[in-house]
Length: 278
Ligand SMILES: Cc1cc2nc3c(=O)[nH]c(=O)nc-3n(C[C@H](O)[C@H](O)[C@H](O)COP(=O)(O)O)c2cc1C
Image (cartoon, rainbow, N blue to C red; front, side, top):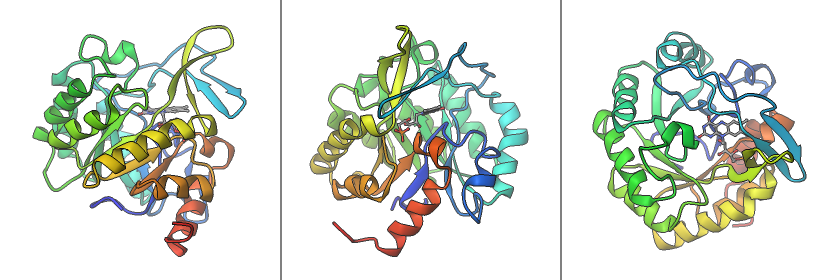
């Protein structure tokens, strides 16, 4: 459990859409009480990449969605109030192309009613983060976290989302914690290619062993840093594998595209039997 957040299972960034798409199918209570991480929000609107954006492959998906989002202004006016009314506990994922953009996003979101936490996407695609930082370099990630932390109230969580292919994942997690991150989300889509050779990110059960290894390394080396495991969680066993490796919580992304009730179901199962198999 991460202080300030709810249960051990969260909706991963970008995989619950705006919330409206998921709500009717998420379970009997819709989004009520769910920890919902929004798609990554940028200051300006982004149309996202040209299609096809998703292709199913054995064990998961390759995606190149390109962080489509309506920009901060529109998000604050429409999507955020809707999510709050739906009863979700909202963590806003932010992505920027300069340090100032990250700071601006954090400042303006700190004043918006209903924002429980921020998740900093420090592994944003190259065309977003290019020039700002090398996303695999731990200390660059940490400077983004510091810029966000300065602008966001100290009593609300800031999560640092690290790619599993970051170099020196333990150093990355430590640097982010020292920069003010409340927790690290370990895992994201893994660099991959579409069958036609275009670049994308692989997600789903195929990436679970990669993220799991990173989670175990971070949890072993930094027992005081809360870790959220992300990558390939789709059933109770895959969620428990992360918790057994030392994660405090997990996020579910791709599995929601197959079964939108996954978060509600796993949350109920893990809350009813939190210690089983551990
Ligand atoms: C369609 C799609 C959209 C995504 N959008 C975002 C996003 O906006 N921000 C982000 O940080 N991660 C995004 N991700 C990555 C997921 O949040 C997650 O880290 C990754 O898919 C691994 O988890 P999974 O195997 O459970 O999907 C996206 C993934 C997919 C498949």
